[in-house]
Amino acid sequence: MTTPLFDTLAIIGPGLIGSSIMRAARAKGAVRKIVATSRSPETRKRVVDLGIADEVTETNEEAVKGADLVIVCVPVGVCGEVAKEIGPHLAPGAILSDVGSVKGSIVRDMGPHVPKPVHFVPAHPVAGTEHSGPDAGFAELFENRWCILTPPEGTDKGAVERLASFWRLLGANVETMTPEHHDLVLAITSHLPHLIAYTIVGTADELQTVTRSEVLKFSAGGFRDFTRIAASDPVMWRDIFLANKDGVLEMLGRFNEDIAALTKAIRKGDGAALYDHFARTRAIRRGIIELGQDTEAADFGRPHGHED
Ligand code: NAP
Image (cartoon, rainbow, N blue to C red; front, top):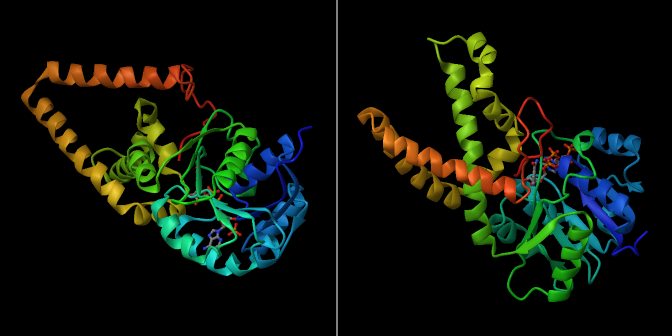
């Protein structure tokens, strides 16, 4: 067993991501003790029953007292409120982090509540599934996935490196970038694909000429893959689009131009333009497989880890 990197890890919001961090941290011996808390008594009880924490507290305040690593794992829209609540109770020298899928709004909303002797290192593990809650988590979720750190300017380098070591021990590759750049990158790799999936599944649902049972029956034609993404948590995704408005609108503008170009190619019967476009996108898929971020396996209900 490795020497623990931190003494006490406090997780606020032991859902899919929070409980996966707890499971992975325990499996890897990354911390000596794990404390967790959640707003609902049901989730707190579930965490006790699952036995994935050493201690479950009723309040956020109790959870963070004495912890040297605190990770806030709640929806992006409430991270600021949580930071305000726990700020005065954080131990001097502790690292405060989060896992939010948007980073600009996290720095804006949490940053002002972080007291001086605490190191604030926002993070985003780009790994997830469409499931939620403490039962959905698993220790291997972060293996060979990326975790992006977005420390505000002037953050203690030692603290950033300690958090990076924690994520590496959990199996992740770590990269550091500015919150603004993170939000642009994720707008195209995650947020826009989710928006498209939410749109197309909604469009199919409202069709009248093709029945709902036909949509379900013939879903293997491509629709099925969108429904998995469109099944993601509505609160989490509402918060992401509200928080990354600029990044998403920028990418949506480009997307609309490109879809207009493809629409024109179809209308004009321009097979060469369609072929060139599809050949280019096929190469991108090959690149993702070469980078180990997916496999060649045919997609017949195989287990997924997708990137949020
Ligand atoms: P989840 O499984 O739904 O868990 C959410 C946790 O936050 C639960 O403990 C829940 O408490 C708590 N919570 C929800 N609403 C809250 C509120 N209004 N105030 C206080 N606590 C609240 O969610 P998740 O998928 O782990 O996502 C958590 C964070 O990770 C989000 O910021 C998301 O952007 C980010 N993230 C998600 C993914 C993904 O694929 N899912 C990937 C990377 C990052 P109760 O259960 O007690 O209600």
